[in-house]
Length: 68
Image (tube, rainbow, N blue to C red; front, side, top):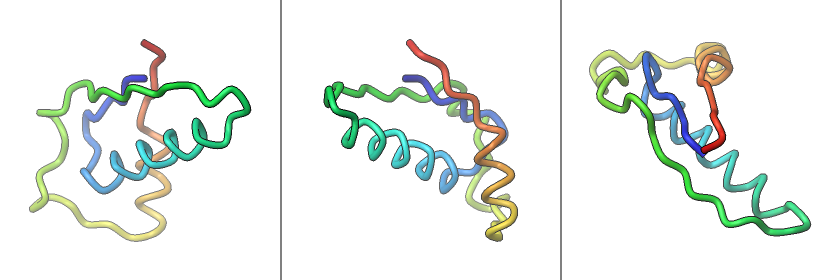
């Protein structure tokens, strides 16, 4: 799986990756999951990150997940 990190903060990217890992862990066939990051250099820097629960939900919805 590839996570598009463009415009996202690191905490949100990590939340999405954790959710993907948890989903794979409970899947009946227990697939091996390899997660890569796309456009990681375009993530928001830690100094740009201002996160509230509402913002985290909104930004998480904006992350695009592609099958590789």
